[in-house]
Length: 39
Image 1: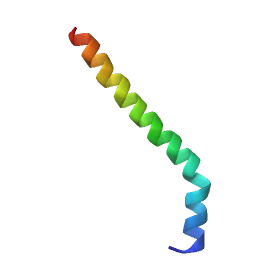
Image 2 (image 1 turned 90 degrees about the vertical axis):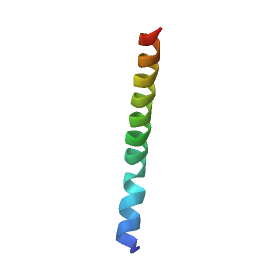
Image 3 (image 1 turned 120 degrees about the vertical axis):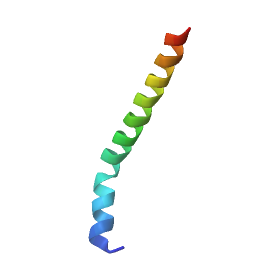
Image 4 (image 1 turned 180 degrees about the vertical axis):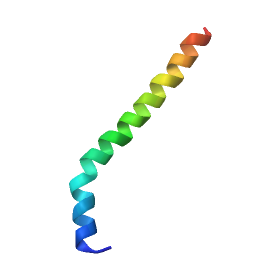
């Protein structure tokens, strides 16, 4: 892995982390919503 790639990843890590967390939060909310809908 060259330095340019490493720098690119470091610069975009916060954005990638936010997207990753947001995706999992959305999935969690959907699964909870389905469980509540079944009750």
